Image (cartoon, rainbow, N blue to C red; front, side, top):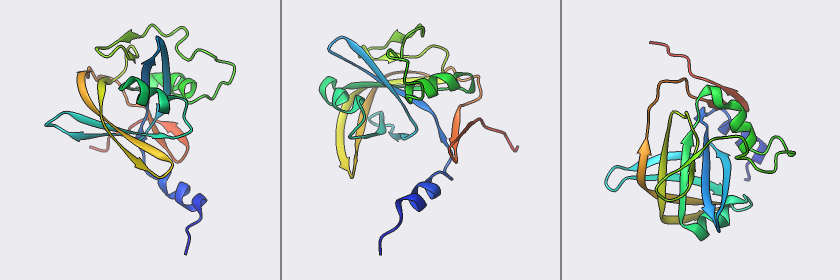
Length: 163
């Protein structure tokens, strides 16, 4: 029995996730993409994981550079989430007009975000049509203080506390 991929996508869409922008630098050029497959893996050593489609432009660049950063977006950054997801095909340079900084690895981190981590590639795992990139966290900042940008059922939103 084979499950219809549309049912799988619909089911997974019921899982609310945070929205991040994954970045890297390769050959002196900055690259970024929106991602919601981001998790903490370990405290000792400090490890995080991102899942990247083999077809994503950034995929071979992370493999080449061996570094990446993850900026955790707040609700005010919905346009950045859409920009780095490629919603506006007219935007050639996704970093244009964003006064980003570079972290320890040289990867860009976006300003005013809830937090960010800067990583050196620790290991990778092939998982179907994606690669799981595990990064050792070399630097991090988590000022918080803003509502997170979330993605649920193909809709952008934020968090509402129940308690």
